[in-house]
Image (cartoon, rainbow, N blue to C red; front, side, top):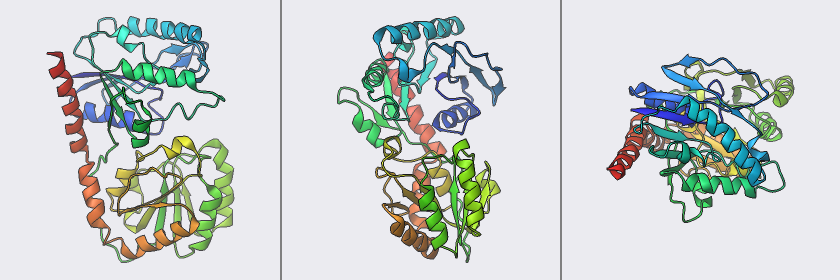
Length: 359
């Protein structure tokens, strides 16, 4: 089969579910066309490349999606983008499935009236709006969902936000690796892995490092420019800290970690909407329990510790250190339930139902 992706992401950015799904489909002998984040009309085009047998495209937009406040501006931009998309995919077969990650691409059905459209919402774009109002974004989201054949969300709270007349189902990320836990007597390290952003609560992280001198804290991942000085200061302040750039889990001492820590600031709406992060099942596949902060809607499980304050995090770190072997029965089940094969079966079922409706 062939799949056409529309996203607000560049392929080289930190991997998210749109990258994960594209790779999964490509791995299973499907053809994937990936439309990256649109550039502004005055920007110079970036090289179009091919990777992993995926073909990439990039179009232009008139104005940033948050600033399309009036119907005239939204209409002008949709026409501008539609013309480019039509020119590139004018001969598209009706069996190609459209995978849309853009909350404001309500015009896709007019371009591809005979194709099935699956819209996947994995960001709370409306809550991320930096303007004092977001009704124009909410309107675009509803139009996009109503024009789609299937709506999937990666968050239960996002699903609840959709109105009752917009049916949807939850579609979580998954682990691309199988469950593999190695028993070790001494697991004293704590891992913070992923994109390091200013939404992290660095004051809380610093306090945790100070109060857990027995543990070594690894901060690993691409760092937001605003956070580089903060990490530099942390490395000077603490001896029990290791800071590394983007690194695959397979290249880290995974058998030495007793827990993975994700500490966001409280009150960030887009973070509070998260049910499970894209990295969660990858970490769990190594048998490492999760400790989270600032995500009240995060998935509930005996191996996931959702903490409200520093004391709860401290207790959770010590509990994981002492009981990681006992937590494996919960972790292994989570990884199996959210394996690559299971998620592929789930997605295939969705596609087959769409085909059946078309008959």
